[in-house]
Image (cartoon, rainbow, N blue to C red; front, side, top):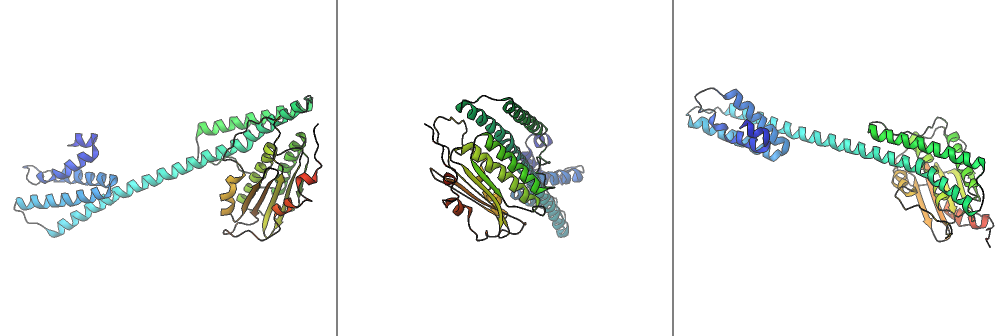
Length: 356
C-alpha cells in the first residue's frame, strides 16, 4: 500500500483508508502505525480536495466503528468523537496548507509579472526612446542633406554608449531574475531640479531635430511631492517628449506647458502629427505609450486625456500634488482648450516652412 501511495498519492490514500478496518482484527498490534497512516492519508486528500478529505475522515470513522463492533468490543462514543475531531483537524490542515501554497505561488507570480513589466517599461522609456532619437537624428541629417559634424557624432556616441549600459543593466536584471528588488526608481531628492533636467534634455533633442516649439514651465516647488507622484511626473514627462519626437511634425511646431491648478500638477501638450511620406518610420504601435498611465493616474486621483485629429494632437494630464483618496480632477481651464485656441495652436504659433 505504501508503494502505491508513493507513486499514486490519491489512490494510495484511499486504499489506506478503505483497508484500515483490518487493523483491529489482525493478531498483532498495528494501531499506532495504522492511525499514523490514516492521518497522513486524510491530510493528503484534504490538501488535494477538501471534500475528499472530509469523505475519507467519515469513511475511516465508519469502518473503524464497524470493525470494532464486529470484534464485539464496546464502542466508546467519546473516543469516536475525539477521533473524528482529530481527522477533521488533519483534513483542514492539509486544505490550509494547499491554500497557503497557492497564495504564495500567486504572490510570486504577481511579483514576477510586476518585475517583468518594470523591466519592459525601463527598456521602452530609456533604451528604445534613446535609439528612436538617434535614428530620427540621423534621419533628419540625411533628408536635410546635412553632414554629420564632430559634435553630432559625439552626441550619437554618447547616446549609444548610454543605451549599451542600459541594455547590459537590463540583461543583468533578467539573468539574476531577482524580482524581490524593484528596478531603478526616480531620484526625487531634488524633484524640481530633476524635472528641469528632463525638460532641458528633451528641449536639446527637439532643437537638434529642427523642431520649432515652446516649453512653458511655471512649477516652482516640488520638494514635498510624494515619491510615487514624482515618479509618475518624471515618467509621464519623458514619455510625452518621446511621443513628440516620434510622431510630431517639426515644421508645424509644438507646445508643452507645466503648471499647477486645484491641488494638481497640470501638463498640457499639443502638436501636429507627422505626415511626410518622404520620412520612413520603423516604429510599430505598442501598448507602452502615454495611455498606459491612465489607470495609474486615476488611482492616484489624477487623469489623462488624449485627443487626436488628422492635423492636431493634444494631451491633458493632471497629477495630484499630494497622495489622497481618488478625487475628481479640479475644474480648470483645460490645456486642451488652450491648444484649441488659435493663439496657442502649434500651427499658429510658428509660421509653417513650406518646401518647394
